[in-house]
Length: 339
Ligand code: DAH
Image (cartoon, rainbow, N blue to C red; front, side, top):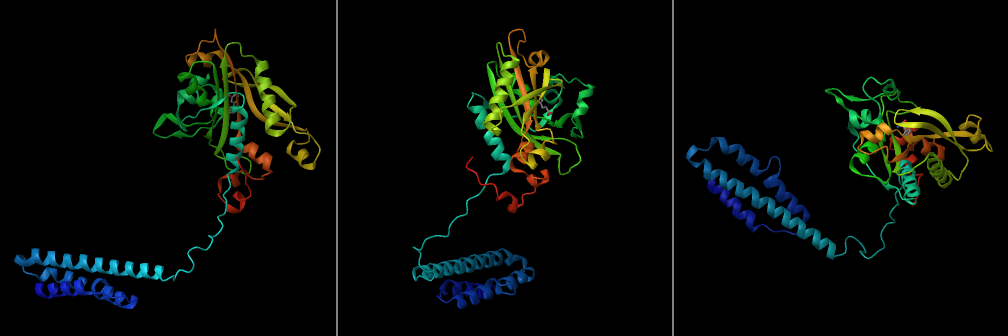
């Protein structure tokens, strides 16, 4: 038996061909499912123990050289086809490449970053899996604070201290813990809330948080900054600040931008009022500064937070928030932009 295999080994070594069919026949003969190699392998159990080792070695040798032979011959065949020009004119111009498009969330996010970077804000990020301290407690929301219910939270089942962040305000805390004023930073990112999914709300979405801390920062600075932002972002400079409540700011406000009532869409979007709510904001609560290691006697600051998805829906007249996470190419291809 071993001798027969050795003869085959010689045969394999000698074999050469430039015909595709012959090479394929050779491959099937040795390496095919019902080929010689498989039948030799099947014989293995009948080989007397004393010969098993040598038998094993030669069939493995046969397998390796048959495989190598097939590969080398096939490769030679392909090279030959190429040099003979079987692939046509290799100098012909290529197919045009289709240019991709950015996701509408990225387009809006990049515009916001661009607008704030022009007035000295840098970009900071934090983790999406947060702890209670950064998402709630440090932001003046101690345990059992009723305002925790404002945001339905996804907790990690095995550890009540770990959660999916409900807002990017958590990055404020991390940034202040690690940097001393002057601070000018915006923090874009994904946030999660345990909410029923519908055309208007999703269980994950995106926010941009803004934070400015320095000596003598006032509410007037906040208003001016927001006005600059709405003018650059929407081309609209008329805003109003409505008193509101957030645990981490005092005083707090909600920001409406005057969209106008010129078209039917304006009318529908603003529910006939002309005003559109775009973000929450306020002066950073002294407790928050204190919690993050910044002296509230020396420094003050303002903060704001807005939803990116909402702005994207608004600017692009997208009727359903779910379109933003379905990855339907017919939808995504409509957003060609340089930003
Ligand atoms: N974190 C708030 C939310 O998710 C938004 C917000 C409001 C952020 C006021 C702020 C702020 O920084 O000052 O609803």
